[in-house]
Image 1: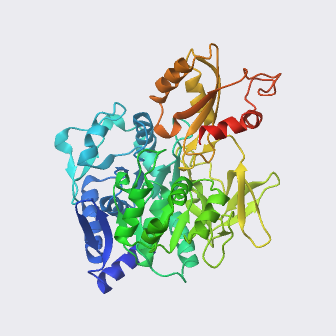
Image 2: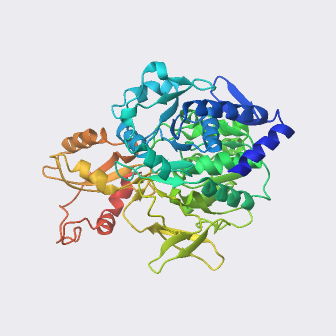
Image 3: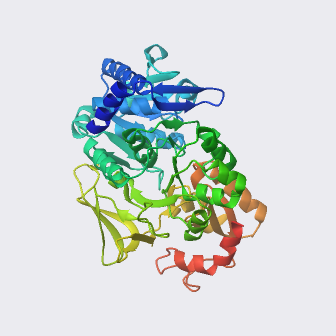
Length: 507
């Protein structure tokens, strides 16, 4: 990442008063100039050095302080672990324990949420460290919270710049370990592909803990010289992981006259469905809408493009340090995820699986001795004669919601069938904003089923909760071809059998 820091230093010298970061707090805007950005990074570096940190967690809503702490840690060679705000208390505890986090950086307004997490154990209040940033604190974890094998872990983790966790396809998500070289290669690949495009300010719509926004949004925006604009996610329209208020986002785009955003498929769907002359006028400043994080509807994409929105779909995954391919203004095919970028190579296996070479992670946390040169994505697809990549489906059962959350249906199904009311269940939701369930119940009592689902939902993160359901016409069995001989669900058969009813749930 040295190139990024060189660019920041040069820009601080040449354009010291130019805005680098803009933090929109609603009632006020806080501007950090190029010169101030370099100074603030240095000040946070000094605070980190004083604490002798090896690995820190970062638990904040989108703000300039998130970006500054991230950059300061990278500059010092401290491993940084972004903590998604949507993680449950159990998942945060797992993350902290598995990464052997020394301390968590957070805002004062989030301290209580962390302090009441029974899976975390902090040192006393007197050892709280105030960082030289607005309302930003460093909460050291107790020695008991850290593993006795800490020294061995730190040695094994040397060279790891970032550990990014998936949204949790099970209760214990895996940490993807990335080096500075991983990040630099992706940044250079994206930057090279955008060299002919104009410089524009970027609005961070996705959570900064999302690797795609962190790298393709923040790092690329800073490398290219645009200002990075942040605002709390609720101000941008995020009601929850399955609800979104598009009007709030459109108003922010218009307010700041931004040139680029990164959107999830579900957000684009909201935008397209709300399109009118007024909304198009508010989006007139946009020159590049990157689309990623899940499977997109070609129909929605075409509608967006026909309306004049500059939407370009891409493809990537955390194990490859985010972006692998991207559509661009001069090379674009609707329905494809673009051509592979310079830092990676893509091939298709005999079974149709997409394989990526040349940009593999260091490994999963706890499995760093099992480094793979190739990344088997689990996605099925093909490459056309012009080199455009198409993703056609998932090789395994993992559901990817339209909000980009990876969910193991078996995990949710196991929780649901723990209820005495639900005897069998099949969960679906690929490319949908929320999960749905086909329920087999003994007495077909709608109220009892709803109460059972409500009870289970309380134990699940909101992205893995059941929002729609229907009662099956008959129990799943070998005889009606909905179960295998060893009792496993034949998901495709079930989905086809209830295709129309499932679609009606989302209407």
